[in-house]
Amino acid sequence: MKKDQVPQDNENLLDGKTRDVQYAIDKDGKYTTVLSLGWEPKNIVMKQAWNEINSHVEDAREEVIAGKKSPLFYFMKKNMMGVKLLSEYSGISRWKVRKHLKPKHFNNAKISILDKYAKALNLSSTDDLFRIGK
Amino acid sequence: MQIDFQHSMAAHCENGVTANLLRYYGLELSEPMIFGIGSGLFFSYLPFVKLDGIPVASFRPLPGFIFRRLTKAFGIKTETKKFRNPDKAMEELDIMIDKCIPAGMIVGVFNLTYFPAPYRFHFNAHNIIVYGKENGKYLISDPIMETSQELTYEDLKRVRFSKGILKPKGKAYHITHVPENVDIKKAVINGIKKTCSEMTGFRGPLIGIKGIRYLAGSMQKWPEKLGAKKASLYLGQIVRMQEEIGTGGAGFRFMYAAFLQEASTLLNEDRLWKLSEEMTETGDKWRDFAVRAGRICKERYKTTDSYASVSDLLLEIADREESVFKNLKDIF
Image 1: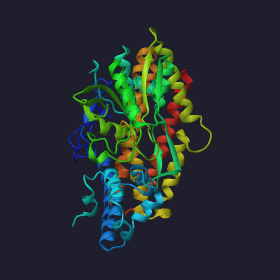
Image 2: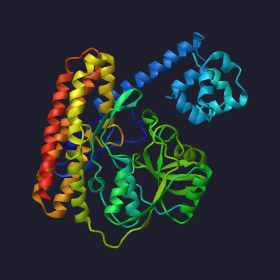
Image 3: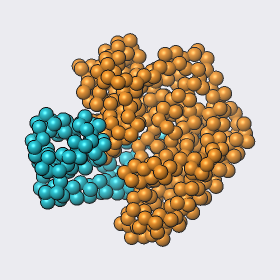
Image 4: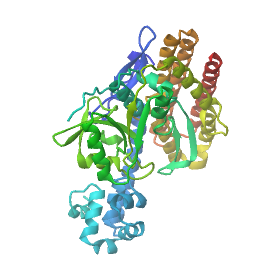
């Protein structure tokens, strides 16, 4: 790749926080580094991955609204977690997490348990665990 | 307390951390040199290891390999520690900072607050350096970021003890001794040899050039076997692994080509320059692959016939790389 070919396809996937270091050849044929704001193929596959995640999150929201799953299921998906990972982050055993994915059990969960979930799921309070939006 | 530490960026976090740590101890090496000597170029396709149900192709060796190989090559002494108790891990970090020792550490990026949000997956093998503490906040040199960053005690503790696959368990490492004279030439030659044997010499079909061919073979069958949607997710994941932050673009090929240029000058060996050019060409081919694969992914799962063409391209890449590594091997 030549230096002037280093792509700058910015779709804000780097959040405006940083840029990618790319190695490219200068006009004398020597390698140098260029900072890049992004590249289309990479942007496409990144967005593809996020679309997939977001569609799982939306499915989860619908299941919660339909009363099939507890809101915990929605937040678990939103944090890209499975039962195992949520169990590790919250310190609550896997079978309990599984139980709490059902609305009936989740609604009866102790506040200390909810507190652990809220922390693991990056929510500021246990009330947020019941707000799934829309 | 702040250590007089110079932050610099890198395409790959482990290279960058290694370079920044070595510079602090007076050994200045470019990222490509670290990558080459540490034999960072690698390929493996492990269809049975799945991430979110999608098989993983890796363009890098296991986390920690580059640092370990490089320090070993130079006889640099290091100390690595894992912890069970998070508070203890943080306590020891404070002691290191007081002693003016910059500490490398492995963290997960999911809760890494300063990281670009779209990249915050549950990935647990990111490398950073902590080089100080000011107003209760830790000063962080993260090679992926343009400038140095800060993390609170809680936030740092959290990412050091992230959960999931490859848990870092507070893993921290630092340099204890750098010899006065290091033989860079010898290290370069050994690094090249190691990469050649890894890319061409592994038994079994999944590692190195053979792994690229195996991937090409499986890819061809994806649309029929998995259906258009799933096939495109599989393909997208390969491109993400190839181009995501920390892989340096086109699966590290350009960085390796840069290393071969430096090696050519250092060893006064013109053939390495020539091979660097060939390596650049394979990098360009990897970019073509990403462009075409990206197009398939973008066509919203409709096309299935183009898989044969990207698979052929991979086979061509495999042939070219095989020739590069064979020729490289013949030089030494």
